[in-house]
Image 1 (cartoon, rainbow, N blue to C red):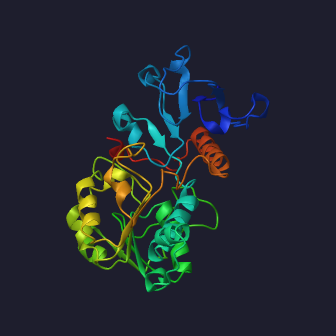
Image 2 (cartoon, rainbow, N blue to C red):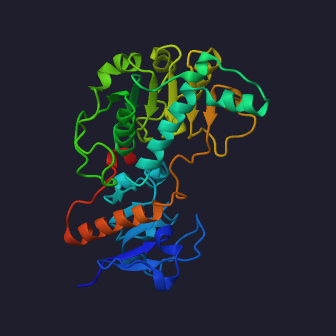
Length: 337
Protein backbone atom coordinates (compact mmCIF):
# COMPACT_ATOMS: atom_id res chain seq x y z
CA UNK A 1 0.00 0.00 0.00
CA UNK A 2 1.41 3.40 -1.01
CA UNK A 3 2.30 5.75 1.81
CA UNK A 4 0.60 9.18 1.81
CA UNK A 5 2.84 11.83 0.26
CA UNK A 6 3.72 14.84 2.41
CA UNK A 7 5.35 18.04 1.13
CA UNK A 8 7.01 20.11 3.83
CA UNK A 9 9.04 23.28 4.32
CA UNK A 10 8.79 22.95 8.10
CA UNK A 11 11.89 24.00 10.08
CA UNK A 12 11.76 20.69 11.95
CA UNK A 13 12.97 19.09 8.75
CA UNK A 14 14.62 21.72 6.59
CA UNK A 15 17.05 23.08 9.20
CA UNK A 16 18.91 19.76 9.57
CA UNK A 17 21.17 17.98 7.07
CA UNK A 18 19.37 15.42 4.85
CA UNK A 19 21.20 12.51 6.46
CA UNK A 20 19.88 13.59 9.88
CA UNK A 21 16.26 14.13 8.91
CA UNK A 22 13.93 12.68 11.55
CA UNK A 23 12.09 9.63 10.27
CA UNK A 24 8.31 9.69 9.98
CA UNK A 25 7.73 6.08 9.02
CA UNK A 26 4.01 6.36 8.32
CA UNK A 27 4.33 8.73 5.33
CA UNK A 28 6.46 9.50 2.29
CA UNK A 29 8.21 12.76 3.10
CA UNK A 30 9.26 15.26 0.43
CA UNK A 31 11.31 18.08 1.95
CA UNK A 32 11.40 21.32 -0.07
CA UNK A 33 14.81 22.80 0.71
CA UNK A 34 15.73 26.37 -0.10
CA UNK A 35 12.15 27.26 -0.98
CA UNK A 36 11.38 30.97 -0.78
CA UNK A 37 8.33 31.93 1.26
CA UNK A 38 5.41 33.08 -0.85
CA UNK A 39 6.60 31.30 -3.99
CA UNK A 40 4.60 28.55 -5.74
CA UNK A 41 5.50 25.00 -4.85
CA UNK A 42 6.52 22.47 -7.53
CA UNK A 43 3.43 21.05 -9.22
CA UNK A 44 4.98 17.94 -10.79
CA UNK A 45 3.47 15.73 -8.08
CA UNK A 46 0.79 18.12 -6.83
CA UNK A 47 -2.12 15.75 -7.38
CA UNK A 48 -0.40 13.03 -5.35
CA UNK A 49 0.12 15.20 -2.26
CA UNK A 50 -2.19 14.35 0.64
CA UNK A 51 -0.37 16.25 3.40
CA UNK A 52 1.32 19.67 3.57
CA UNK A 53 3.41 20.70 6.60
CA UNK A 54 4.41 24.35 6.51
CA UNK A 55 4.18 27.82 8.02
CA UNK A 56 1.81 29.09 5.34
CA UNK A 57 0.35 27.29 2.33
CA UNK A 58 1.83 27.93 -1.12
CA UNK A 59 -0.02 30.43 -3.33
CA UNK A 60 -0.72 27.66 -5.86
CA UNK A 61 -2.44 25.47 -3.27
CA UNK A 62 -5.37 24.97 -5.68
CA UNK A 63 -3.11 22.73 -7.76
CA UNK A 64 -2.89 20.26 -4.87
CA UNK A 65 -6.24 18.67 -5.62
CA UNK A 66 -5.59 15.61 -3.45
CA UNK A 67 -4.72 17.55 -0.31
CA UNK A 68 -6.48 16.18 2.76
CA UNK A 69 -4.48 17.44 5.75
CA UNK A 70 -2.59 20.70 6.38
CA UNK A 71 -0.32 20.97 9.45
CA UNK A 72 0.91 24.46 10.34
CA UNK A 73 3.77 25.44 12.64
CA UNK A 74 1.89 28.07 14.65
CA UNK A 75 -1.00 28.08 17.10
CA UNK A 76 -2.55 31.10 15.36
CA UNK A 77 -4.21 30.49 12.01
CA UNK A 78 -5.52 33.86 10.81
CA UNK A 79 -2.98 33.75 7.93
CA UNK A 80 -5.01 30.86 6.48
CA UNK A 81 -8.21 32.86 6.03
CA UNK A 82 -7.55 33.81 2.35
CA UNK A 83 -7.36 30.12 1.38
CA UNK A 84 -10.96 29.39 2.52
CA UNK A 85 -9.88 25.97 3.74
CA UNK A 86 -12.97 25.55 5.88
CA UNK A 87 -15.02 25.26 2.68
CA UNK A 88 -12.77 22.70 0.98
CA UNK A 89 -12.96 19.71 3.28
CA UNK A 90 -9.25 19.93 4.19
CA UNK A 91 -8.41 19.09 7.80
CA UNK A 92 -6.21 21.80 9.36
CA UNK A 93 -4.17 21.14 12.50
CA UNK A 94 -2.05 23.65 14.35
CA UNK A 95 0.84 23.60 16.82
CA UNK A 96 -1.32 23.93 19.91
CA UNK A 97 0.72 22.97 22.95
CA UNK A 98 4.15 23.98 21.64
CA UNK A 99 3.82 27.56 22.85
CA UNK A 100 1.87 27.00 26.09
CA UNK A 101 4.85 27.16 28.46
CA UNK A 102 6.79 30.12 27.03
CA UNK A 103 3.68 32.28 26.62
CA UNK A 104 2.41 31.37 30.10
CA UNK A 105 5.82 32.34 31.51
CA UNK A 106 5.60 35.64 29.59
CA UNK A 107 2.20 36.22 31.19
CA UNK A 108 3.59 35.69 34.69
CA UNK A 109 6.65 37.83 33.97
CA UNK A 110 4.50 40.67 32.67
CA UNK A 111 2.16 40.55 35.66
CA UNK A 112 5.14 40.81 38.02
CA UNK A 113 6.59 43.64 35.93
CA UNK A 114 3.31 45.55 35.94
CA UNK A 115 2.40 45.12 39.59
CA UNK A 116 5.87 46.23 40.72
CA UNK A 117 6.30 48.88 38.01
CA UNK A 118 9.68 47.49 37.00
CA UNK A 119 9.81 49.82 33.98
CA UNK A 120 10.10 52.79 36.32
CA UNK A 121 12.56 50.99 38.61
CA UNK A 122 14.85 50.30 35.65
CA UNK A 123 14.60 53.90 34.46
CA UNK A 124 15.45 55.00 38.02
CA UNK A 125 18.51 52.77 37.95
CA UNK A 126 19.61 54.24 34.60
CA UNK A 127 19.20 57.76 36.05
CA UNK A 128 20.76 56.89 39.44
CA UNK A 129 17.51 57.66 41.27
CA UNK A 130 16.89 56.09 44.72
CA UNK A 131 13.10 55.80 45.15
CA UNK A 132 11.49 53.28 47.55
CA UNK A 133 7.86 54.24 46.84
CA UNK A 134 5.10 51.81 47.84
CA UNK A 135 4.08 51.32 44.19
CA UNK A 136 7.17 49.19 43.67
CA UNK A 137 6.09 46.62 46.28
CA UNK A 138 2.96 45.08 44.73
CA UNK A 139 2.31 41.34 44.98
CA UNK A 140 0.41 38.85 42.83
CA UNK A 141 -0.78 36.72 45.73
CA UNK A 142 -4.57 36.95 46.34
CA UNK A 143 -5.13 38.95 43.14
CA UNK A 144 -7.56 37.73 40.49
CA UNK A 145 -6.44 36.99 36.95
CA UNK A 146 -9.07 36.58 34.27
CA UNK A 147 -8.28 34.42 31.26
CA UNK A 148 -10.47 35.06 28.22
CA UNK A 149 -10.30 31.79 26.29
CA UNK A 150 -9.13 28.60 27.97
CA UNK A 151 -6.96 26.61 25.59
CA UNK A 152 -3.45 25.41 26.30
CA UNK A 153 -1.90 28.83 26.92
CA UNK A 154 -4.68 29.82 29.30
CA UNK A 155 -4.43 26.54 31.17
CA UNK A 156 -0.69 26.70 31.72
CA UNK A 157 -1.07 30.33 32.80
CA UNK A 158 -3.73 29.22 35.28
CA UNK A 159 -1.45 26.53 36.70
CA UNK A 160 1.38 28.98 37.30
CA UNK A 161 -0.95 31.66 38.67
CA UNK A 162 -2.50 29.25 41.16
CA UNK A 163 0.99 28.26 42.35
CA UNK A 164 1.57 31.96 43.11
CA UNK A 165 -1.58 32.17 45.21
CA UNK A 166 -3.74 33.96 42.65
CA UNK A 167 -7.44 33.43 41.97
CA UNK A 168 -8.26 32.35 38.42
CA UNK A 169 -11.45 33.32 36.59
CA UNK A 170 -12.13 32.08 33.07
CA UNK A 171 -14.46 33.31 30.32
CA UNK A 172 -15.01 30.65 27.68
CA UNK A 173 -17.64 29.53 25.19
CA UNK A 174 -17.32 25.86 26.09
CA UNK A 175 -17.22 25.85 29.90
CA UNK A 176 -15.20 23.25 31.76
CA UNK A 177 -13.82 20.60 29.38
CA UNK A 178 -10.85 18.28 28.99
CA UNK A 179 -7.92 18.68 26.60
CA UNK A 180 -8.13 15.17 25.19
CA UNK A 181 -8.22 16.45 21.60
CA UNK A 182 -5.12 18.64 21.92
CA UNK A 183 -1.41 18.20 22.54
CA UNK A 184 0.38 19.60 25.59
CA UNK A 185 3.61 19.07 27.50
CA UNK A 186 3.21 16.39 30.15
CA UNK A 187 2.88 17.84 33.63
CA UNK A 188 1.77 21.27 32.44
CA UNK A 189 -1.52 23.05 32.01
CA UNK A 190 -4.90 21.98 33.35
CA UNK A 191 -5.90 18.87 31.35
CA UNK A 192 -9.27 18.34 33.02
CA UNK A 193 -10.15 22.02 33.48
CA UNK A 194 -10.38 21.84 37.28
CA UNK A 195 -8.06 24.72 38.26
CA UNK A 196 -10.19 27.88 37.78
CA UNK A 197 -11.98 29.25 40.82
CA UNK A 198 -14.87 30.22 38.60
CA UNK A 199 -16.04 29.82 35.00
CA UNK A 200 -18.07 32.50 33.22
CA UNK A 201 -19.95 32.22 29.94
CA UNK A 202 -20.64 34.96 27.38
CA UNK A 203 -23.80 36.36 29.03
CA UNK A 204 -21.68 36.85 32.18
CA UNK A 205 -18.99 38.85 30.41
CA UNK A 206 -19.60 42.01 32.46
CA UNK A 207 -19.45 40.14 35.78
CA UNK A 208 -16.24 38.43 34.63
CA UNK A 209 -14.53 41.72 33.74
CA UNK A 210 -15.62 43.47 36.94
CA UNK A 211 -14.00 40.75 39.05
CA UNK A 212 -10.44 41.13 37.75
CA UNK A 213 -7.09 42.64 38.64
CA UNK A 214 -5.55 41.29 35.41
CA UNK A 215 -7.17 40.41 32.08
CA UNK A 216 -5.25 38.06 29.78
CA UNK A 217 -6.46 37.43 26.23
CA UNK A 218 -5.92 33.81 25.19
CA UNK A 219 -8.33 33.23 22.31
CA UNK A 220 -7.55 32.87 18.60
CA UNK A 221 -8.20 35.61 16.05
CA UNK A 222 -11.15 34.68 13.84
CA UNK A 223 -13.81 36.59 11.95
CA UNK A 224 -15.93 36.42 15.11
CA UNK A 225 -13.24 37.55 17.56
CA UNK A 226 -11.66 40.40 15.58
CA UNK A 227 -12.47 43.60 17.48
CA UNK A 228 -14.24 41.58 20.16
CA UNK A 229 -12.83 43.63 23.05
CA UNK A 230 -14.51 47.04 23.02
CA UNK A 231 -14.00 50.25 24.96
CA UNK A 232 -17.00 49.32 27.09
CA UNK A 233 -15.30 46.02 27.98
CA UNK A 234 -12.08 47.78 28.94
CA UNK A 235 -13.95 50.34 31.06
CA UNK A 236 -15.83 47.53 32.79
CA UNK A 237 -12.50 46.38 34.19
CA UNK A 238 -11.86 47.97 37.60
CA UNK A 239 -9.90 51.22 37.42
CA UNK A 240 -6.20 50.49 37.84
CA UNK A 241 -6.42 46.92 36.53
CA UNK A 242 -3.99 45.52 33.97
CA UNK A 243 -4.36 44.10 30.45
CA UNK A 244 -2.11 41.48 28.81
CA UNK A 245 -2.39 40.51 25.14
CA UNK A 246 -0.09 37.69 23.95
CA UNK A 247 -2.80 36.46 21.55
CA UNK A 248 -3.46 38.80 18.59
CA UNK A 249 -3.52 42.60 18.50
CA UNK A 250 -6.78 43.04 16.54
CA UNK A 251 -8.77 41.20 19.21
CA UNK A 252 -8.92 44.62 20.87
CA UNK A 253 -10.36 47.62 19.07
CA UNK A 254 -7.34 49.88 18.67
CA UNK A 255 -9.13 53.18 19.37
CA UNK A 256 -10.61 51.67 22.52
CA UNK A 257 -7.23 50.56 23.82
CA UNK A 258 -5.66 53.96 23.18
CA UNK A 259 -8.56 55.74 24.90
CA UNK A 260 -8.32 53.80 28.18
CA UNK A 261 -4.54 54.11 28.25
CA UNK A 262 -4.64 57.86 27.64
CA UNK A 263 -7.11 58.65 30.41
CA UNK A 264 -5.49 56.34 32.96
CA UNK A 265 -8.36 53.91 33.43
CA UNK A 266 -5.97 50.99 33.11
CA UNK A 267 -3.08 50.68 35.51
CA UNK A 268 -0.99 49.37 32.64
CA UNK A 269 -0.74 46.87 29.81
CA UNK A 270 1.67 44.34 28.36
CA UNK A 271 1.31 43.78 24.62
CA UNK A 272 3.19 41.15 22.65
CA UNK A 273 0.91 41.25 19.61
CA UNK A 274 0.19 44.36 17.59
CA UNK A 275 -1.81 46.07 14.86
CA UNK A 276 1.16 46.49 12.51
CA UNK A 277 4.38 44.52 12.04
CA UNK A 278 6.80 45.90 12.86
CA UNK A 279 5.08 48.49 15.03
CA UNK A 280 6.13 51.82 13.43
CA UNK A 281 8.14 54.28 15.55
CA UNK A 282 5.39 56.89 15.31
CA UNK A 283 2.70 54.59 16.75
CA UNK A 284 1.25 56.08 19.96
CA UNK A 285 1.61 52.83 21.92
CA UNK A 286 5.35 53.43 22.17
CA UNK A 287 4.77 56.55 24.25
CA UNK A 288 2.93 55.20 27.30
CA UNK A 289 5.19 54.80 30.35
CA UNK A 290 2.84 52.20 31.87
CA UNK A 291 2.81 49.95 28.78
CA UNK A 292 5.28 47.14 28.07
CA UNK A 293 5.72 46.29 24.39
CA UNK A 294 7.48 43.13 23.26
CA UNK A 295 7.99 42.22 19.55
CA UNK A 296 5.80 39.10 19.35
CA UNK A 297 8.33 36.89 21.10
CA UNK A 298 6.30 35.47 23.98
CA UNK A 299 6.22 32.15 22.15
CA UNK A 300 8.36 31.78 19.04
CA UNK A 301 10.27 29.33 16.90
CA UNK A 302 13.41 30.54 18.71
CA UNK A 303 12.39 28.53 21.77
CA UNK A 304 14.85 25.68 22.45
CA UNK A 305 11.89 23.28 22.64
CA UNK A 306 10.04 24.42 19.51
CA UNK A 307 11.48 21.94 17.02
CA UNK A 308 11.10 18.98 19.38
CA UNK A 309 7.51 19.88 20.25
CA UNK A 310 6.44 20.54 16.68
CA UNK A 311 7.92 17.28 15.45
CA UNK A 312 6.20 15.38 18.28
CA UNK A 313 2.81 16.78 17.17
CA UNK A 314 3.45 15.90 13.53
CA UNK A 315 4.56 12.36 14.34
CA UNK A 316 1.50 11.74 16.51
CA UNK A 317 -0.83 13.04 13.84
CA UNK A 318 0.93 11.19 11.02
CA UNK A 319 0.33 7.90 12.84
CA UNK A 320 -3.30 8.88 13.46
CA UNK A 321 -3.81 9.91 9.83
CA UNK A 322 -2.58 6.58 8.48
CA UNK A 323 -4.69 4.69 11.03
CA UNK A 324 -7.79 6.68 10.11
CA UNK A 325 -8.09 8.10 13.64
CA UNK A 326 -9.14 11.66 14.55
CA UNK A 327 -6.23 14.10 14.45
CA UNK A 328 -5.11 16.26 17.36
CA UNK A 329 -5.24 20.06 17.36
CA UNK A 330 -7.86 20.30 14.65
CA UNK A 331 -8.91 23.86 13.81
CA UNK A 332 -12.67 24.16 13.42
CA UNK A 333 -13.72 24.77 9.80
CA UNK A 334 -16.04 27.51 11.06
CA UNK A 335 -13.02 29.37 12.51
CA UNK A 336 -11.24 29.26 9.15
CA UNK A 337 -13.90 31.26 7.30
